[in-house]
Length: 396
Ligand code: F3S
Image (tube, rainbow, N blue to C red):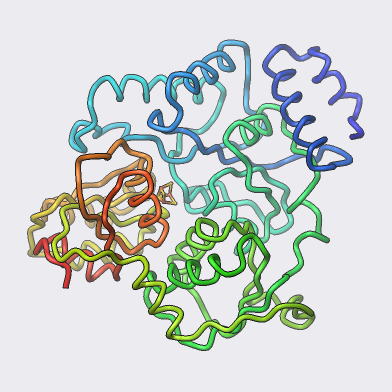
């Protein structure tokens, strides 16, 4: 791989241990994937923030980097942590976990990383423009950045994204090269999708069939931010793709020469059945996977007005989004009903194993982690159905 003279100096240790170590990570990755050079990045999103996932080894790694002078050179934001950084007690997090999680966040902030702690960085000020090269490592956000924003990023791991932040570079391979971004499978969607879980079901159905190939969706007339973020999270989780095309005139005209797949109402209903376990009672309701938008919070507040929840109910969102919702009076209404905000965290990265049995959610991705990480049974439905479940404890 060709390195510039500045990059050679980084690798030789002339900018210190932290820069050298991270340049070694990136050159190793570039060699593995056949990159011929490094490219500058304008934005980074680092996943692997929860102490639940990092453990002591991850914490030690981050603290070593922070104390040896590592500094982010570009705008760098963080994925959700294992707890609400302010209200962790209310969410039932123990003090020992909280202390460790706070050390993780301190290490990141000492490196100049913005502790946004959200998987929707594009909603809170880290929104790259079309064609920007970036290094993001939250799979739903990666797919959103590539597919909706038109930015260019590989699906980074936490350490390689952090290395990109510290060096300002990433190896030029994969999604950074135009020739690798062409659609490979045409997906004819022959049913009208309305609510968010149906977009999650679409991601499930397509992801299971095509794996990491790049789909071109045809037949979806319009999709909201909420629907798109759900599709991005689901297709990345169940298939592994980092990019899809939809409403992109370049590819609608050129189309794909290869495979075609048709999705009908039967496929969507089959996916929803697969994501729903047999359980008529729920004890945990969580919305906001990926993190809730202001519009979703507005809707939840409206549905909860004058009602009381009887089950643990988390609204997962970015702290900045909750602050905006607070100005609109939504937070007060939600809290008056007994529901809780889970800012900076989510139902998948908080330490919840053993606390609940049945999760109700509107997110196909939350079902995956609810089952896999926490052994929950899952029920998936619209926001309305989830709010009803939080109030009645029943899934109907
Ligand atoms: Fe975000 Fe957690 Fe879902 S990080 S995409 S809310 S699993």
